[in-house]
Amino acid sequence: MKSTVSTGKTLDAAVEHALKELGLARDQVEVKVLQEGGFLKSYKVEVTEIEAEVVPEETIDADEVHAAIEEVATEADNGELGAQTNKIKEFLANVLEKMGITGVTVQAKEVGDVVALTIVGDNATATIGHRGEVLDALQYLSSLMLSEHGSGFRRVTVDAEGYRGKREKTLQRLAQNLEQKVKRTGKPVNLEPMNPYERRIIHTTLQNSKYVTTESDGQGNQRHVVIRPVSQSNVLNSPSAPRKTLNFVYRSDKKRRK
Image (cartoon, rainbow, N blue to C red; front, top):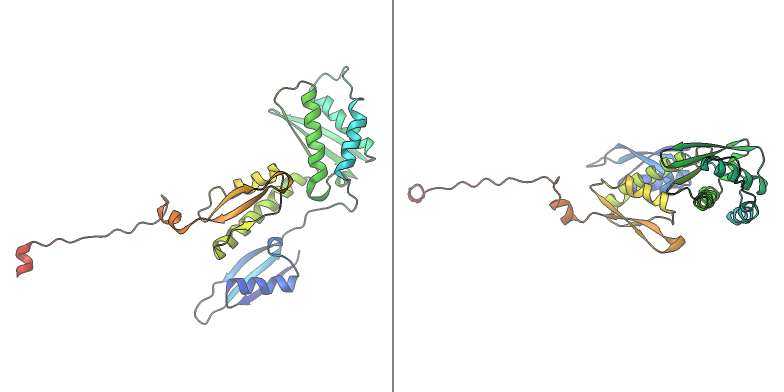
């Protein structure tokens, strides 16, 4: 990870100088204020690159997943496996085989009403795709297959190389950084399009913020999160806002005449 310390007359100037030096964008770094600016003092910040996500050199296009699913769907074994979890585990393993991904196995466990499938092995990163799009496709199609087998209300998750957890932490850091940016500039920020799971992470991270609100906007694949500043009137009227107490002193007419 790259890191640098920079100074500037304003906080924005210090951060921008560091970003130019590192060659990174604002949403790719974490900012730590080392010294507040003021009279005859400059802002001093430490800017550190956010740990990059692991993106495999060779990724599988989501269309290939759909092609594999059609080939495997008719081969799903409805025999002696019994448990729905075992059926969907075997189904996913067959899909990966049809996709030409070797050197991996599928592990499964049940947590409440969730069937958690984990792809492990030397080539597991090949099942992630750009920002998890292949994992999302595998998860969606596995959920459809589980529903077709009459599992009732159950949810399926598919993960590989701990990607889901890493992605969640990255989005939480991004949300917190953008919260500070919106607080500082007073202007809304539009995030890139995300799936419902990732949008929920942004909303949850900032749901108790005193400075910003979040909402989803757009349609279909272009649906994204917008982070907006809380209006000044809302801040002043919030239950946690500080209140000034005014003390009035009343004097009698007799005292005023003296």
